[in-house]
Length: 172
Image (cartoon, rainbow, N blue to C red; front, side, top):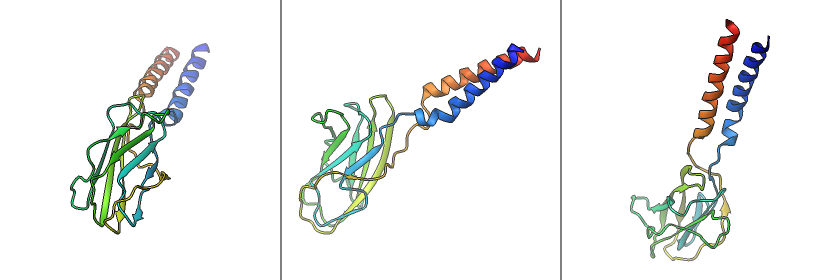
């Protein structure tokens, strides 16, 4: 009789791990940007600012801005803002003289916990004059990263193995 209870406990524990594994995954999602996704600006910004939900590592982050023809229009200077005590802000400067058109911001980050996220957003410029964009605006995150952390997968495998062993003993 105790073997049945052990097998049931292992099975329930394994189900709980799978049910809550996605909520336990920690990823640094995009929470705001300047310019915001889909913005139509009268003048080109001089800088891109992206703010994420969790602390980022100093290396492994990238912002690339391209025009409609695929030419890179950022200066290749993605920087983690060290003045931000939460370490969640990335910036990149843009080349001067950007003309009217649609621009794509592609980003990749590296969270403090080692997870990568990436995504993209776009904005358009109606005139060629450069100005500094104003504060960040909220946008939905467009990240795509690991769907389940490795630790949760390993724990799930161990729990299922334990449940299997318990059921094997019960079946004897």
